[in-house]
Image (cartoon, rainbow, N blue to C red):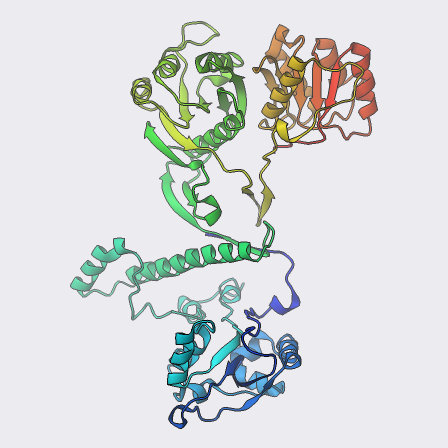
Length: 568
């Protein structure tokens, strides 16, 4: 479970959590009510035998509600005063109060643990005003209705995170609701029934067992509440970035290790409502091979996200989260071979992804294809991922290696929220879902690209989106010829990409994930001298005019996308 809160909090929420609902539209602004501690109660006409004693009726106007809100938000009502006695704090601030025991006709007990747990309270809160039988039930039992509930929970977070530390017992006492696991076992998962029966049969007193069940109960409620919170936020019409955010995570597997053998690791599935049937590697089905590792998940995710961007049959080969080979063809076997050929050294031990079914013919080629470097070494892969497999294709692939991981995944939905951890916090952003069809490739050079050159530029632009910055991709005829990634300067990335492309760079398209800060005697001029036919970049540099002049000098087409694709 990940919980995020906005860094800036309103004054009313800094020390006391307040949850409120405005007076129901079913009741006029001026209504006879009873105030019970910090809640507004509407008494109903009831028979004398059910009339609550000690009720103090008065008129609740819009002004009165505003005054109560201002009173509650004043510094006088800090968390300490509320904890020492809400009724006393309200009375001292001039608010008319009816104590809870006057409504329930039962004194608080067990050190205040039992106070509001009574039908006279919960009936008035839970009754639906638009349901006649609800209101009739309240009438029959002499129960009034509440319109505003102000909730101030114990400061559990502050207590357990205090620098002075806290004992386990004190921590339990600062849990506001449901903290009696020492005496009452709470079971929310039927999978725990067998262990529970054994525990009860043994007559043992295992406090760790009780704590585990208590943890599971609170975790279950937290996940449940996060789903409710997520759903309700969407109903408010709020944007993608709520003031606070909770992400329910469920353990899928304990991994052998993390990014390196000395790091322990696990894999969790996001159970947010937004992720239900939303696709992605996390929910992929593994048909064969060794268990997935930490790095396997990262690489498979990168490969799958990239290949799903293409509409034509496409193969993507990824190594260390960077696509080192991409090709689209009507014949998927040809696309696979071209993707490997782009960088066979990097492809060895990489991840191969397809956006079409892996049938028997493709599976045999994956199994038997030899490395283009020597024509003899059979290509080795960690993972193959595709949207589906034919029965025969799956059978053939399983024969390639006992360790080959074969994944069947669903395409990611667009519009997802992307989360990334930094020390002590999380960054949230919209996913980068833009495709070439979503933007314009504006020609700014004297020479306009031919149709095939423009298509090459669009293909390269879609590839470079998935390469780590600073990123350069050279492509031709729907095939990546070379890429440079992760360099501190764009010139070095360009040189790496051109070295991989070799002589095929002539007439090819070059795409850059961001603008070129310099043109003359730098990346743009080197690219032009190498013979590229068209350059696609976002633009936005103060020296864009230099890039245009440079391309004009060498007769190269230059198109600006006005869209940057940084990937860190």
